[in-house]
Image (tube, rainbow, N blue to C red; front, side, top):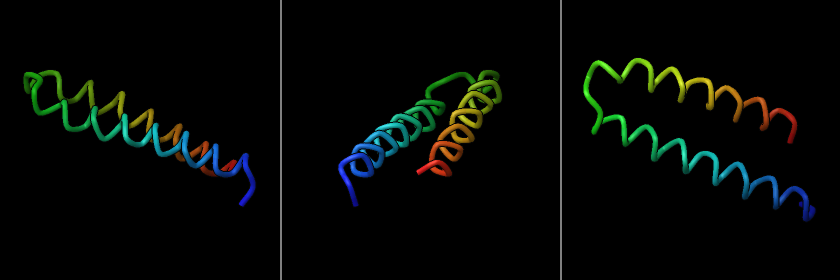
Length: 55
């Protein structure tokens, strides 16, 4: 594993940690906002998967 691979892994780890925080935070929002928040999170998860495909 090269330096760039380690850097990429750290970035992916940070992105996933942020997404986990966002998912947890949805519980604190009014129920009416859950759908839109999960849609945003879904888009970010798709982007994270796309980024992993390039690793």
